[in-house]
Image 1 (cartoon, rainbow, N blue to C red):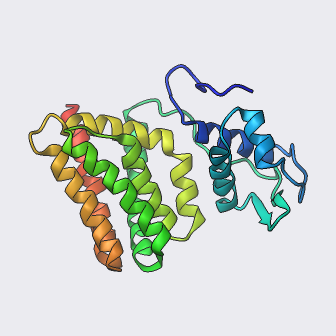
Image 2 (cartoon, rainbow, N blue to C red; image 1 turned 180 degrees about the vertical axis):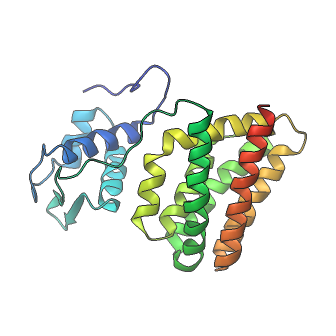
Length: 235
């Protein structure tokens, strides 16, 4: 099947599309419990993508507990479609965006605090990689909402609690809307992008330093500031 846009307005990466289609197939019961998935080579041919993209999709499915791997044998289905997948409808209005921020303010500070305690070298490297993408964009007076989301998702993953990362991934499209408009609003200020980058950098430093309370507070302050800047700009 040929990869493309899922709809006319939202552009998704090839990795996102492969992950979402495999996620739906497993949840719908297309695969039986403990059934072996096609090989990476066969999946790459089916989706017309490279094997690294398939490998990343499989990693995300393992993180969500939907599949497991056996050394030398491949990947197997751990769960079938007994429950509806976590997901949300389309973000339709300002009230939805405010509700999204309210939810993030409840979840993400806790995830940041947990990440400060539980991160490892790999998860910390993912946070820093996203931060460097944001630094590069800031130096060019630009904003990359994809790197912004990856930063927040990397923190959720570093918390070593799949509920955090699963909720973030399910909310990706909703969060992206807020990040897009927030990025546009801070670009209007002479030092807006630099200030917001500094907020992200401070969160990363608190996590790297193992300071959970500080990471929690900084994430809360960042999200609160983001919400206020966005909605003040829209008035």
